[in-house]
Amino acid sequence: MVTKEAVLDVLSGIDDPELKKPLTELDMVKSISTENGNVEITILLTVPGCPLKDKMTADITEGVQRLAGVESVKVIFDVMNDEQREQLKAKLGYGASVSPDKSRVVNIPAKRFIAVASGKGGVGKSTVTANLAAALARLGYSVGLLDADVYGFSIPRMLGINGAPTAIDDKIVPLRHGDNLQVISMGFFVNEDDPVIWRGPLLHKAINQFLTDVMWDNLDFLFLDLPPGTGDVTLTIAQGIPTAELLVVTTPQETATHVAGRVAKLAERTKLKVIGIIENMSYFEKDGEREYIFGQGGGKTLAEKLGVPFIGEIPLRTSIREGSDNGKPVATDGDEYEVSLFESLARRLL
Ligand SMILES: Nc1ncnc2c1ncn2[C@@H]1O[C@H](COP(=O)(O)OP(=O)(O)OP(=O)(O)O)[C@@H](O)[C@H]1O
Ligand SMILES: [Mg+2]
Image 1 (spheres, protein in one colour):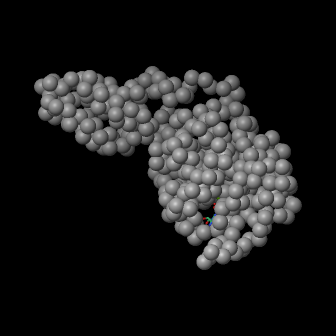
Image 2 (cartoon, helix red, strand yellow):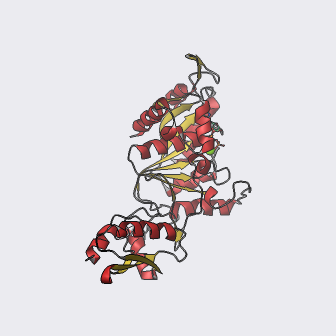
Image 3 (cartoon, rainbow, N blue to C red):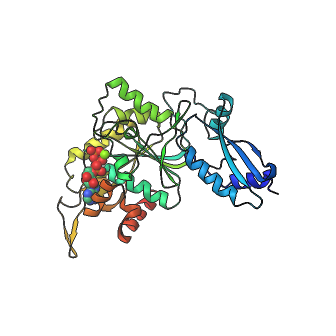
């Protein structure tokens, strides 16, 4: 005869598709009956009309059917009440300790925060961020990526993620790239072709909402992909996360003192520590010959000027651009050289 315990055991191996934790651990199993081998399971959803009901039904049915003595499997859905949802949020690390001034210091369960900045736009910040985050996730770290470029978001495309995140009450559940990378972007809420126009206060609100209302699962790293320039968004983030570290991306020709000056000023204004410089688009290699299209040495010079470590260089490669356009970052989907390049850059951040 099939027992409740046996069914529970199966359910403990099935994850909620969004929260990526076992149904049993999330207290989502309301009841189980196993009369005459006819198994009936009631699952508590966080929100009614959860889009992943079908997937859950299939996963559960498939697992339970394998038990000896099972005649039929029926999955019924119910919805959590307020109290159950509060308990779930507390379990996921929310609600338990809300910081006193919510607008200033955010309560994100991450060990390190790395904000990726540059002295000017278009140098490859988003590409570097997406690939470093993917590389660390590939190494088994739990990584978050907050796309703070709410006008010109590019992270969803670069990681090949789309869809609308669900919300549990006022908390947004990030979308995932693989198991270890959680991502939030304005791109999940607006159409890529629609221009997003933020007025000052709304911009501040949008960023703050990303800082306070996202339900991150425990993170080793949270990357923040900053918009170009040294504007308000970076300041808002610095106020919210004073322990964030700045990782600066530059191209080789940026020896001009004004770029160094801008980065230094950014660090000074935000009071964030610069952890190092990555030079992107360092050279183009063809038939074993390196061509220094954008000049040479800018990254190292900038690192020296700022007195911070030079972390490494990334060549200009068609495959890197294609990976970004096709949602297949080279750090995980590229050739052996590309995977190991981003792995070694990521390891230097450790
Ligand atoms: N190493 C590289 N090799 C080839 N193409 C690259 C490389 N790095 C970035 N690119 C390409 O350059 C373009 C700009 O990169 P990206 O969007 O990452 O820059 P950004 O600094 O985030 O820009 P913005 O300032 O607008 O946010 C993209 O098309 C990207 O695919
Ligand atoms: Mg960008």
